Length: 466
Image 1 (cartoon, rainbow, N blue to C red):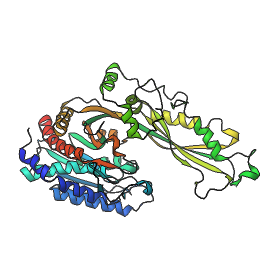
Image 2: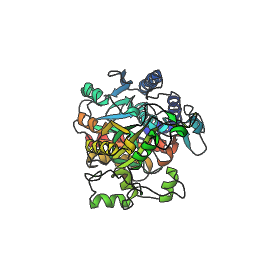
Image 3: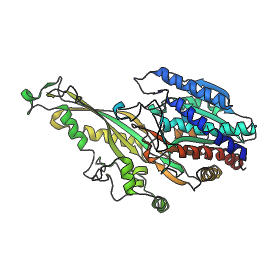
């Protein structure tokens, strides 16, 4: 089915309205993490519900499961019983703003700059992911009075804290959310302007380690030397985790990592890669090197190999620090694991290694916060073909297929609840966007192109699955 000219015209005419709606949504500091006002997440959900109603969707509700932050659901089923159904997923909660001193403009006051980008917390992760589809749905409804297929929308409120209740929510509302294809709008493009279809996600294992050396802090001058210090002991324990080249030193950690076949390696080698641009986008010092397994390509290291990072470190804050030996210090060790690697095995090996042979007889304890597997799919079949055609039409260039080094733990359970329906992972993040960091931003030209691709996706899925 071709897209009527009047639909594309309606989309273009409404673009600035959509940007204004996105900015209004970004002004709501809907941080789902503990310690932030949950009423703001409630306010964010209500604002999303209002936008969906105004766009012409039906059955709009704000729903909850247990004590979770609110979900928003909506639908348009006017295509009839025999028509295919797409379920569009996004999330409205956002990460904490981080260091306010490092934002060039306030995080919850979205700002358009001369570089063609919009800045603000949540602007790309994931409020634009919702608004691009809302713009497409509204354009179809305004121009033709209907959609080419049935559409359901689910907007989550706790994705940034791990989607702890999503599986229960999906099972509780399984019938209501039943669909033939999942369109998940929370991933990335390989480069600005280059549409990308994500075919794999890494999983995540997070192990907290606590070192206790003393029953209270003591003077570092009067006691230092024979007396162990918790922070120093923790540094020794953490230093054992990686080799000099940055590869993981935990014994056996690579033993169950699936190797890529020749076709996968050829696919990775065919993707564009500019090391200088990669370094610039990551903020690596010009004199700095790349870490990890140097015999593997950068894309393989990010998407298909495990990586380890200390993602939290606690001892004594620099501000107000005293000359003390610390009684206790803590850290969180995060391991990203590729599809096919066993998260429980990784958890046990990392935790055992952290506790092994503690320096100076200090006590070392571990606890696992997260252990979720990676996910992958074969991008074959009519739904994926439809997505490729839609991305090409929207961006004006052929899409590429990529992996993702990050984790979206619920994709597997989501697909299971939908009885194995194909999952189309599309997104708007690009290398400069700095999602989760300060000065998060959205390329507005890509926002326009992605909205156009969504318009085409509705028509392509209607044809492909009808």
